[in-house]
Image 1 (spheres, rainbow over the protein chains, first blue to last red):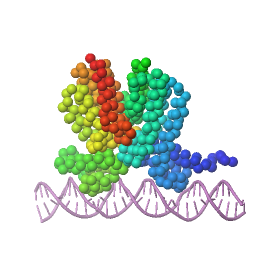
Image 2 (image 1 turned 45 degrees about the vertical axis):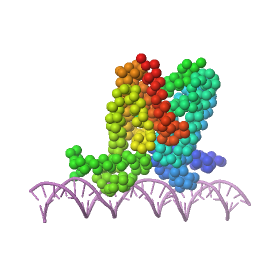
Image 3 (image 1 turned 180 degrees about the vertical axis):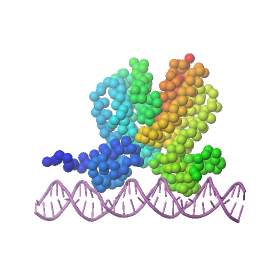
Image 4 (image 1 turned 90 degrees about the vertical axis):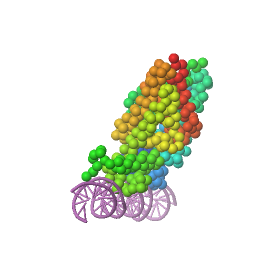
Amino acid sequence: MTTGTKAEPRSDEDRRARILDATWQLIAERGFHAVRIADIAKVCGTSTGTVHYYFPGKNDVLAEALKYCVDRAFARQSTQLRAVHNAHERLLKLIDMQLPRVGQVRDEWAIWLQYWAEATIRPEFRPAHNEYYARWQETVRRIVQRGQRQGIFRADADPHVVALRLTALTDGAAIQVLTGVPGMTIGTMRELLVDFVHQELVAGAR
Amino acid sequence: MTTGTKAEPRSDEDRRARILDATWQLIAERGFHAVRIADIAKVCGTSTGTVHYYFPGKNDVLAEALKYCVDRAFARQSTQLRAVHNAHERLLKLIDMQLPRVGQVRDEWAIWLQYWAEATIRPEFRPAHNEYYARWQETVRRIVQRGQRQGIFRADADPHVVALRLTALTDGAAIQVLTGVPGMTIGTMRELLVDFVHQELVAGAR
DNA sequence: GGGCTAACTGACGCATCAGTCAAACCTTTC
DNA sequence: GAAAGGTTTGACTGATGCGTCAGTTAGCCC
């Protein structure tokens, strides 16, 4: 009798995970500073005391929730990308997966905007941020290198520079989508990024 | 009787301006949600009561301070750009003025990051944000059009699309600089943007 | 001077929350 | 079945900070 009907006795890890899950979604929804411990508890159907039982303080919950969100997104991304072998297609798949449509991906983008605002002002956020950001750039860089090995991307492109530019362009476009800049839709964003990839990597290759 | 007329003595406007000036710098320094009315008053050498005398509530001060900062930055920009007549040089000047060096420009970038985070979550911030953002894109677009009239930029470039891309790239690069992403310095950022302008507008013109 | 008003002050009321803690509630083990 | 240890609860505490308001000062006109 491990799992009951309604009141399911959950293991430690489940409780923790549920708290983190609720927390990152609240951050995405309301913003970093508008999340209350009581809100987290309410979403989890538990009490504020329990949140404090698993996490020493509010900052710990918030920081771990950010990490939790980014880690899960990265894992999901990796899994899906691994299935695509052609580097060009893989890069297009990555672009597609990162378009801030409504739903989970949009929420994850909201997390990034919160992270940037926070990291700019509080340097203690930067190490973690930079680790995640580097991971993302590395994903792009590796796909570029793969494409060069496959002979479908221009050999004269510097993978590092391309990654820097593509990530910057993606972030910038995402901001415009999320803040509702007129003329920047999901479609425009995809077009912009696909064009960039074509110009920078595909045009005139071999 | 509260202040309702525009025809107030100068000292009145000075006070308001001083409060707004202190506020936007505090936002840049500590972040939107970490600014206290007491802090603003302290910086201005006045009391919390005075802040409330000029602004009904905290949100009003913060919102107006954002507007104040953006307006002043835009005015400064316009003045300096007007002096450069060659469109290519003007665009390079714009890029240079927007590099988030330490000091005022960096603080203004911090404001933008705060704005984005806020506008993503609270739709009521978007109209004002989009107005400012459109103004910026328009600046870029006009310089592109000017360059095309001067015959120094490629005639086949769509000024609107170029503006969209260049602003996105600038924002993305600025984020990387401000959050301290390794490998992205002020120099790298300038190089990235100058290259973009060259590739997109200058190469093969005429 | 005396009356009037705008500008300013800062202490206080009140709401909001993070974090605490003692008691209650399980689950396991002997 | 009882003790032990882990988990959960929610009322409570203390700190913080917004907004209010009664009171003060300074300028100005008659």
